[in-house]
Length: 262
Image 1 (cartoon, rainbow, N blue to C red):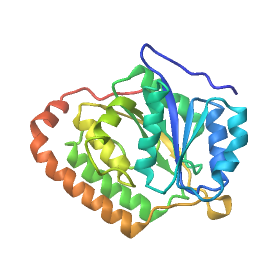
Image 2 (tube, rainbow, N blue to C red; image 1 turned 60 degrees about the vertical axis):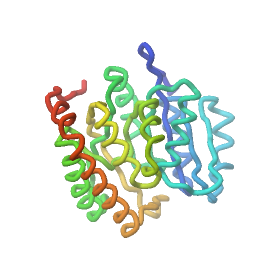
Image 3 (tube, rainbow, N blue to C red; image 1 turned 90 degrees about the vertical axis):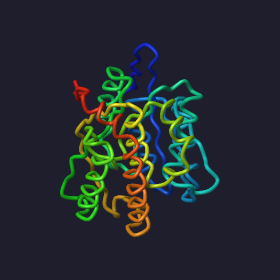
């Protein structure tokens, strides 16, 4: 199926796929995404698994595919930041971030984009529906992290602060990321979603299934439980302290009606 780019006034959507040594699942994911949407920006974050060569054929077939190579692995947040900068140069106003490892439902991508067209001032957040393949420790850790995110936004309606499938307003996201040094690794999703909320960007949550491919299917995770959980704890500590200074603003946001889709 050839993608159909839906546009509203002053709205243009694209997809950013950050990748670090994702293996054969990368090309599969990119091709499936290209079949429903474009442009697609793939950011190779210092990958040394031959990903660049695997994408050459796809680039020839799909002019809407743009591949960015970072010389060193800098982390997911840094990769998405590079993708956001390319998206802005292409005239993209709203970018969907989509994991490279086959976790997300490609068929839901047009739905997320349609929600962004209808609510261009919002951030469209995937609310994960886990199956039996989801690692228990990850699910429990996510619940704990989401509790702190709710505290940092005074329960402002963010369904999941860590899920990687979401649509961000490009200009506002770049503005926020330019003011902080954090948010360049696995703390990216939490940092950006909370700080967007603090700037008045309302969340719209859309349930979507998430699948964890087994190693035999090419599944790979670069999340390191000790290192990255320590990072997330430090991030939440800083964000919680900042909330004390933002209380009046957040209380005003609480009076906004919650967004629903459709």
